[in-house]
Amino acid sequence: MNSRTTGHAPDPVIVVGSGIAGMLTAIRAAAHGDVVLVTKGDPAHGSTRYAQGGIAAAMGDDDSPDKHAADTLAAGAGICDPEAVRITTQEGPRRIAELMRLGVAFDREHGRLALGREAAHGEHRIVHAGGDATGAGVVAALLEVVRRDPRIAIAEHETALRLLVRNGAVTGLETAGPDGVSRVRTARAVVLATGGSGQLYARTTNPAGATGDGVALAAAAGAAVADLEMVQFHPTALAIGPSPLQLVSEAVRGEGAYLRDARGHRFMLDVHPLAELGPRDVVARAVASTSLRDGRDVTLDLSHLDPARVLERFPNIAAACAEHGLDLARDPIPVTPAAHYAIGGVLADMSGRTTLPGLYAVGECASTGLHGANRLASNSLLEGAVMAVRAADDIRRGGEAWFALPPRPVRDPAGGGTPNPGAADRIREVMWRHAGLERDEAGLVTAAGLLDRLGTPPDHETRAMARTARLMVAAAAYRRESRGAHFRTDHPRARPELAHRIAWLGGEPFALTPARPVRRHIPAATRAKEAA
Ligand code: FAD
Ligand code: SIN
Image (cartoon, rainbow, N blue to C red; front, side):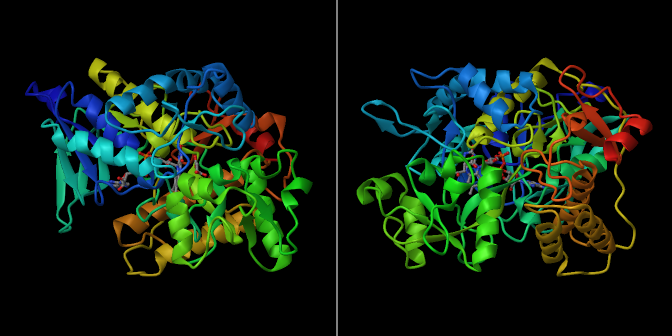
């Protein structure tokens, strides 16, 4: 029972996750009541801390939110939600100003914000901090504010296990502390800000902990999820050492670095008019196929650039390369694609509301439609900041669910409980091989079978991985076309009848169109036609 039903002092807002989305939600919500910030590791741990390139926002004199929106829509390959794009790009500059007020020191040049450029952005609009240490700067500043705020209690090293659902609404959260003891808290609202799912893949840039927990928690509670087939692979992770791999930011190509094959040829010139700054999925597939053809990694070449500028702009990437005996400014740097960003997630509207009353989702774990089928670089920190504020404000207003759809929980296959220490690695191999950069029907059927055979892994994190992986494979199998980040070798072209987002509730697909986001359940006859 929560305070809505007892009339006692209001329950806290529970925020799950301490990246940009979670911390900013907590800070904003704490202005109006108590907040518990639950995070499964050290509070500074999450993808946010590792972000390099920066945050996209129309801050330049020649730029505008409309131009930013146009680039975002173009990257999204026809299925962005235009309203999500409009709101996010318009509110971007205000959120950058707010981050500065909260203590983030963005880099400056001649007294003004220094603006970088990344692939598929038509303008210089990426604010960054510490050169290539944007995420670390954001986390340090926000964490200081969170720690100072007496209304925010941080429950660190505590993992969210299960959402409590009562009469069709989320009323609280069950967690497990570092000692494994479970704890139940009631909440005014629960906000999922659990980040992405790169750790479902054998090669990823995402830190440990990016295991798709938000999608698993929401789906088990009966909330809708969307766009899970859309996984963005970054073209240039350092191809040395175990996963997670060091990212070599797109900003490095933005500064003019070349990609070369084994013969030293700039192969991207043959692939796309924008060469190294072509769309991320195109560059990632070209890097993968060129490495496969040559039998060795492709390399990034910065040797024609000013070495002093390279080291000043990318100190952390240079240091990571130096650990492997490589000089970023002079040596060929071996790179590989790696799973980088979960475009899909828990279906949420532009207030962060999910299909379950009392449950919100913000940041990378949510799917608002901003990214469509392909995220524009540096739009995710922006989305986290914009949606955190909007969700916290909605909770203050006492917002209800977007389209209170009755919960329809997904069920895990039976057969779990057997200790299976290799299950997490098995999932990573299956997903990399069969649901990676390129997919086809046979591979996805194989993946579904292999994942089902895992049953229900005994530990919470691997269980979440398995559940999210199954949902992603089902979504990839359903979308029989290629669009943006989702490339099907057996259906290499986009199909106009699939030019919409697809949500899933209790294992059933829904078409999402901007005009009527959730209502249109895909009738069985249409489903058969779309699946043909
Ligand atoms: P995260 O920062 O990932 O935080 C998730 C939090 O949830 C963590 O605290 C985690 O411990 C917690 N959590 C997860 N599951 C549970 C659970 N069950 N219980 C409790 N806590 C849980 N984007 C950009 O816009 N610009 C960039 O330059 C950029 N560079 C990137 C570089 C790298 C190497 C990576 C990996 C990503 C990059 N991205 C970039 C993407 C961006 O960093 C992420 O999309 C963004 O930081 C996600 O923020 P978030 O708050 O949603 O999640
Ligand atoms: C990068 O710096 O290349 C990553 C930027 C992003 O993923 O948005």
